[in-house]
Amino acid sequence: MSAPDTPSASDERVTVSDGAIAALVAAAEEGVAFDGLRAVRDGDGDAGYRFETPEVTREGLTESEFRDACSNHPEYVDNWWFFEGADRSPADRDFLRWLESGDAEDWDVATRYDALREGIVRSWGQVAVTAMLGAGGRRYELRHEDDVGTPLPDLDRHEDPLTARELVKHDDRGRYRPLKTAPTLPTGWAFVGLAGRDCTRALDLIYPATVANWHLEREGDLDVDHWRPTMERQTGIYGVIETWDRGDGHEHVEWVAEACCDDSQCLKRREWQYDEETDLDADGGDGVFPCREPCSLVVAAARKWTRLEGEQSRTYEFELTPSEKEQVEAIIDAVADGRVDDIREADIYEGANRYRARYLRAKRFDDEGNLCGVETDPGEEQAPDEEH
View 1 (tube, rainbow, N blue to C red):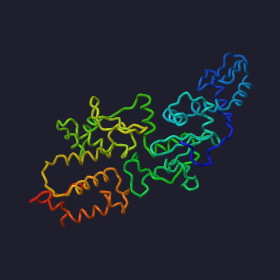
View 2 (cartoon, rainbow, N blue to C red):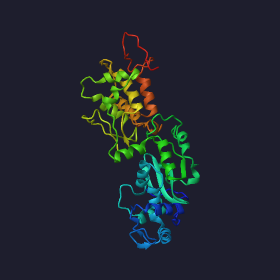
View 3 (cartoon, helix red, strand yellow):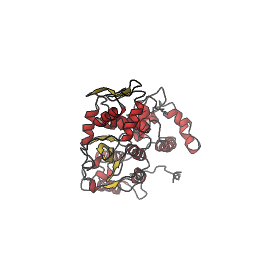
View 4 (spheres, helix red, strand yellow):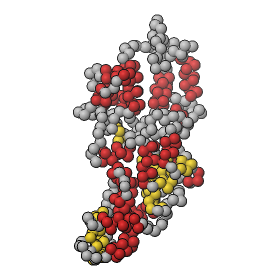
């Protein structure tokens, strides 16, 4: 992905702060080996420093000469200081390194800094994250991936990462987003000039806990809570979900996962299964960040489905033409896939077209809203839905 149209990307010369050099002088007492940089004080004398990169080796340096070597090879010192010298959490550190090189760990410092001058773009869900060299060192820009080609002046510009909390509450149609990792992130904004910590903070507000869980997974420490133990912990009105197992080979959980955990519904990659020994066949998605447990939306939906699945099946007889049967199927598919708004009013050949649906309703529904005049509970009074 190419860098977005932004004035932040630059070809500025890298400079290293006095604080970073002083920190490396102190760290050389114990020895430093990081991304091709080696710095060590070999002896107690005045000329006991060694400074080494893949391009140069200098030994027997005084502290003043060592500091000069740092200033003359700023990229290596700046790189060490950014990732090792700064007070940064392991998750933030690994994430910011991943932004620069992805899984290409063999990228050397010179190659990465050349790429940073152009701007390196990675996708995090629907967010395009650009790492670049700007005033004062590395800077980061966040925007919706659909806005990568949009000129920065045409976007709402933000610099405070805390504004992300309000920014992503609603989708582009103004509807509240109960699931923060749903693929409904609004467009039209950009966070610019962010420092590393502010970059991860903004992403944590856009997609809560995703950086932390991504890091835990890479370290082999992700604590996954599977379906069965999670449901066994439910209490109160949600305790009914635990009764859903009826020896059906967890088929109902497959339906839940297929309905809620597809890439079209959630950008996380589902790592939870039925239990520790039993995997689900439903696709878990391809997201870059993992889902470690059934979320609150899945639990709430499962409660409703638990109650609905408690009903006994009945046989209904409807009279439909073959085209009308296919139209009912097309309507269900369109609603389930979220394509209803994409179907144009003039596209009469689409089964879920609004006018075709209205025609089917006019033809096949009675005044009470019954399909083909067939009552749901003939001879019985319909019980009200407890949810309403």
